[in-house]
Image 1 (cartoon, rainbow over the protein chains, first blue to last red):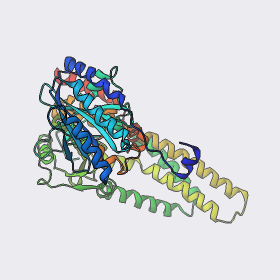
Image 2 (cartoon, each protein chain N blue to C red):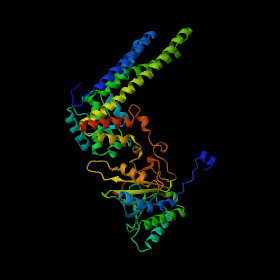
Image 3 (spheres, one colour):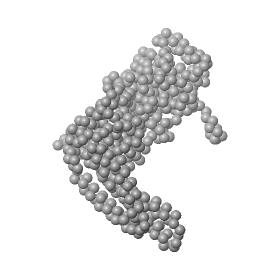
Image 4 (cartoon, rainbow over the protein chains, first blue to last red):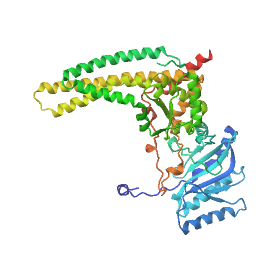
Amino acid sequence: MGFLDGILGRKKPAQPDLDQIFQLPSAGITLQASLDFTPVGVGSVAFRAPQGRAFAEVQQEIQDLLDADGGPKVEAVTDDFGYTWLVVRTDPSDLAGLVTDLHAINSTLKDTGFGSTLLCSLVAFRGPKGETLGMVYLFKQGKFYPFVPKPAGAGEQPGRDNIMEIQVRDLLTGELSIEPDLGRWFAVWGAPGLH
Amino acid sequence: MAKTRYASDPGLTRRMIATMGGLSVLYVIVVVLLIALGFSAIFVLVIAGGMIFAQWYFSDSMALRSMKAHVVTPEQAPQLHGMVDRLCVLADMPKPRLAIADTDIPNAFATGRSPERSVVCVTTGLLRRVDRDELEGVLSHELSHVAHRDVTVMTVASFAAIVAGLLIRTAMWGGLMRDRRDNNTALVFLAVVVVSALVYVLSYVLTASLSRYRELSADRAGALLTGNPNGLASALQKISGDIAQIPTRDLREMEPVSSLAFFPALGRGRGFDLARLFASHPPLDKRMENLAKVAAELGQ
């Protein structure tokens, strides 16, 4: 961004960094070996769907593309925040295939000029005690962070298991580019595949 | 002081006597200064006294308002009330009112001029982060502040600082507004400002050290009451360690609708500088050491 752009407040949209997501399958093996977290077989991509036919066509194209291999259908869910989640379900053992699908969604959106609508991608894991872990991937930073929601008991606030999140970070630091600023580890309550 | 089952602390009593001794010396300096100023002595004392009294008398409602907290009934927060009920029965003390502040910063405080008029306030950020044992540790810590009447103690202790601060302002204002008859008046005013500033700094250091000791004392008494120092210890880790920076707010609330760029929602992404917020509190490792001692005592 140039000096003049800064003065005039013109800002270029941040372009997503997609390739880091391919680090996830090997991190999944580490997660399983050390903390007994196994993939659920659910991954999702969240984005803000703009109005208009152009985007609707792209979204349809993505869904057709991913449905073509005869696997389970890609599901589009709109959440309370107005974001659309494209939910991909695969065989839990095929983490690499899931990540490839997520990458396909992301790169199609990016190549058609909708990269700036992307919010995050998320791959769900399940722990030994039934807790769920979402590895959240932020494209704009090219960084991952863990999110472990704790189901709320009666009269309790929904919480997150920070200790487990820190444990996951410490475990995966060498393998994934983890967001170093804990203040950016925003929650994604009710994301697909999580409690 | 109402007799409660919170352990009394001879060390705390000694600290308080020492601090009060130091503060008394400062009071004398302030009074001498006021006499040197002559004309405004009674005026300054009345204003300062009124301010400090109001601060003490309305401490509960003022603190609640500044935190945007609201008092909750047993119906609104049954879990919280149940926990405090049990702790108060255990400690044999009147139950304070409970309030919840809607902020993501994990924190808790107790305020109020007497145990009967006290309020214990927790933030939603705290409730979201700690589990049952940890919350009990935090509440027991706050209840021990109530039982020790720490609000009153600290209000009295900060009197010198407030009077000195007021004096600096009065002297400067007076020095500016009055026509300069000779150089002596100007010098006197300069001396007043310098000495007041010194008194202010000294009394601040004294009260801060008392405050830090009070926190350790409340940690200790609180842990002894619940018999579970680990609960408070792990809560403290969560509240003041870097874990406290992990937000509980949703990513989608933070993302601007246009999705043009991602901005850290909390102060340039550095998180909150909790060390600054807890300046009146002892460092974390010291509190952990203190709680470990309690754990060792309980084990004997």
